[in-house]
Length: 77
Image: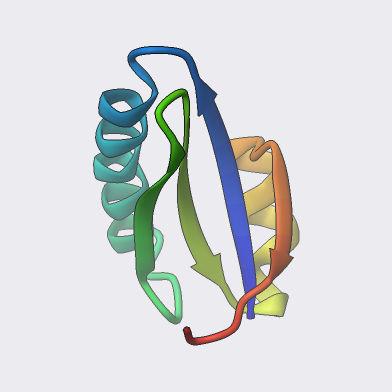
């Protein structure tokens, strides 16, 4: 599984990441993604992320449609 990540920086980072996750959930449900795992996380006061987890078979179409900033292998933590 691959975690596609969007980075948000600045004083509004938390709220922006939180809101972006709403759209990722909507997309995940509309496109019937296999895992439907989304989330957001604060890395520090000025940097937050939103993410969606996709199967390897879904990665390229989702990446091309949503333009994440980066990706990494997903591990259940």
